[in-house]
Each structure stands twice: as structure tokens, then as C-alpha cells.
Length: 174
Image 1 (cartoon, rainbow, N blue to C red):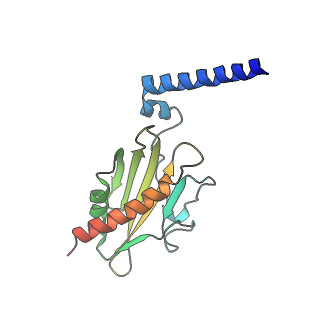
Image 2: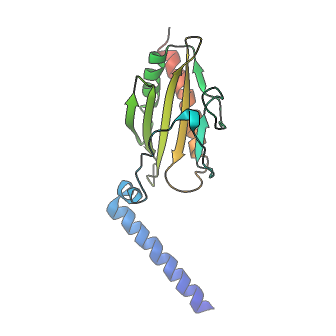
Image 3: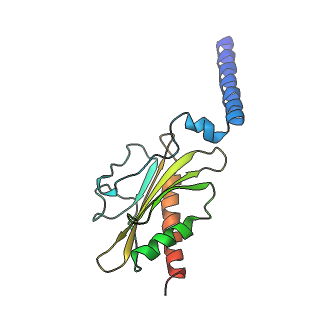
């Protein structure tokens, strides 16, 4: 039994060493790219289907999304164009963030944000929607590329971004 446990420990140690070597040689971006693209692409908030695993988060309202949201959409009493720019300004200083798409006409933005130590990529989709009263709603969907759980990272991000966007919209407003 002792020989078996020793063999298992050696095997586990070898796997850890190989993974660490691959991580150092390839770097996190190239290593995680082997599991698919970091950018998970566009979403249609109206028809969005949430994951079965707890590694995504959604800020939306029933009028814009059929999927159950974690928090309500951010609603700002500012015109669509102003809010679209406020979103970009609000998140520009987020660590490990790369903007991969922006369409001002459609009010959509897409980002990839990587975790600090391991470089795990998450895709964040943003949509700014004009509301009936002349304001704007901001829909946010953040999801992990890897794993089945994110330890609350995506929900924390969606809440943080919602606060940042509201703060930025107030700064640039009348």
C-alpha cells in the first residue's frame, strides 16, 4: 500500500511539474488558448441561455432578457450615446482587460479580462439599450472560458462594473 501511495504522489508531482513548466514556457495566454479562444463571442441578451455551471453572471431586466438575472440591469437617466461612452471610460482601468469589440450603433461592447496570477480569461458582454423615458439600460454578462466554478468572480465583476458605470455616468453628466 505504501508503494502505491508513493507512486501516486510521484505521479501527481510529475503532473504538477509538467503543468508548471508548460505555464512558464508557453505563458498563460498561449496555454489557455489550447482550450479554445479567450473571446467567447457575442451574445443576444434577448435569447441568452445561462450556463448550468456557476461560472457566469448576468445583470439584466425581464424586458430585455428571458434568462434569470443575478442583479437588475443598470438604468441611467442619460442618453444612449453618453452612457455608451461612460461604459468604456468606467472600465478602462480594470486590470488585465482587453476590449475585443465595440459597435456604437448597436450599443455593444465585448471585453476579455484575465485573472491576475493564472491569466484565466473571462468574456464580458455589455449592451446599452435606450429606454422609453430617454435614459439607458446597461446589460452585463460575464462568463468564464475555463472551469465549472469561478468562486464568485463573475458576479463580483458584474456588480463592480455596474457601480463603476453609474459613477462614471454621474461624473460626465449635467
